[in-house]
Length: 303
Image (tube, rainbow, N blue to C red):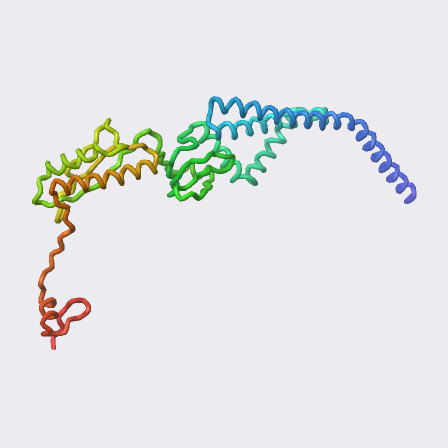
């Protein structure tokens, strides 16, 4: 009886192996066709990426063209793989494949959360375009010129020449200051004059000096206004507009400060240093006359 059971089990295994082999042989043509479809789809996706890259470059920024051409080609390859799976396994319905991919995508989402979040943030940045390649921005304490936006990060070249890579999700979630959003940028510095000088004469002299500086915009015109009455000076603010590019703006500001100083010197308007008043306290008098011991804190120590 034991021998009969063994023979039956062996026969079942043999039938199963034979059936699996026959199924594999039957599926080989479909597998070959599926592989051919996947390879052809991959080749077509490369051509599609090239075409989209050229098209987007004519209408969008280089970063938008680079990223979106890749994303669309990946989506195309995914659709081709679904078609190949449907051909290889005709008994499986497309709805079942999509359901399985749904569970798979959830697992992939948890495993590659950082990559997917940065990719989505990069796509949103490209569609919103708060800044473009070549703009000078400040984000998360980093300032520089935007080199481009990739699938994962935003590339910024700092003013000292170093490259900074900031994840797209951090750029999207944080405050962004775009210095070159407008063509013009307002500069400002403060000049302190002596109380003995006439404030109106000083503001007129500062305004006249600013109008002679190359790079200072005439519209809107430069202005000088009294901002504060300091301890020892009347503080006058000089405001003018320049090109928004940081290096040009700094150069113009340097020339403007030199021109204002030269104009005030020629007009005889004094720019004094801060006045410090010294009060003669008992400890100060004692220290000068060596009449008593003075502690480090400034008190007089009695004998």
